[in-house]
Length: 194
Image 1 (tube, rainbow, N blue to C red):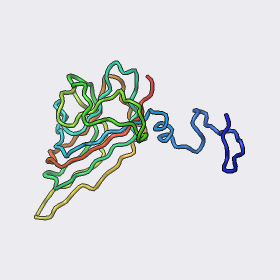
Image 2: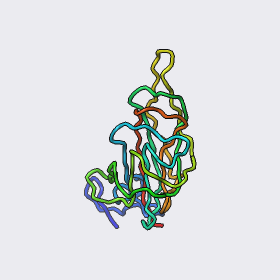
Image 3: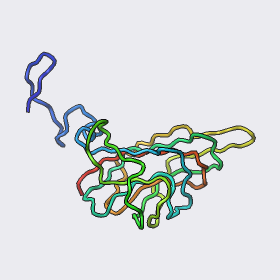
Image 4: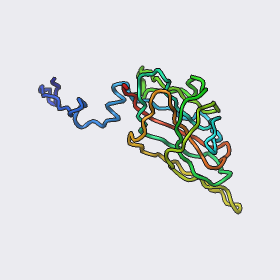
C-alpha cells in the first residue's frame, strides 16, 4: 500500500502490527473506522444512590444480542449548580435487567459527520436495571456549606479501555449522596466484535 508525501512522491505507508496507521492514535483510528461513539447528558439530572436498580444519571447499555463489546475509553462529569450533599461519584456495572432498549440521549459516532451506528443505547432519566455493583470510584462532589458555594469542576476520566461491557450488561453513574438536579455526564467507547 502506498501513499504520497508532500512532494507528491509515492511512499509505502507504515502500519503497526494491529494494522493501524503508524503515528495515529488508537482513538483516532477507531473514530475514522466507525468504531468509536459517544453520548452526553442533554440536560442536568439528579443521580442514583445506593446502587439503586432504578437508575438516574447517565447509563449506557449493551444489548444481549449485539455481538459487540463496549470498550470504555472516557467518562466525564460536572455540575452546573450547587451540590446539595457531599459524596463520592463512581461507575456502576451490572445486567440490563428490565431496561428499555432506547437511545435517549442520542449516541453519536465520534467521527463528526460520520454515519456509523452504535449497537448500544443510553438513558438519562430513570430505567430499571439488574443489580448494580460499584466498579470504580472516579471523583468527589462538594456541597454548599456556611453560605459558601462549592462546585464540582469538570472531570474527565481516561478509562484507558480498562472497562469492557459485554452483551447484556450496562455501565452507569453512581453517587453516595443525592447531588441535586445539577449533574452532567458523558461517555466515549469503542465497539469491537465479541
